[in-house]
Length: 73
Image (cartoon, rainbow, N blue to C red; front, side, top):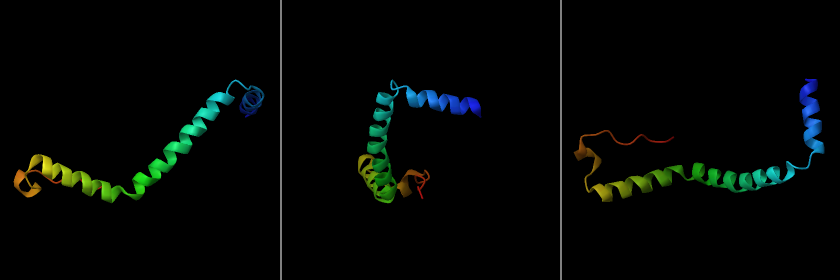
């Protein structure tokens, strides 16, 4: 446990990692809201992709003889 605290003290004193930490925080500030939007709109996105797939293939799922894509719930 002392080694962990010692390492944390060294990291706190060392400013070389500050730039990397700032970049990480910027990426997290961008990615987390996008992830939230994807989770919130997953049903709409799934429906949209399935409709496009039907238009591309031109064959309804019932006529292909395959199972429908799994639903993401």
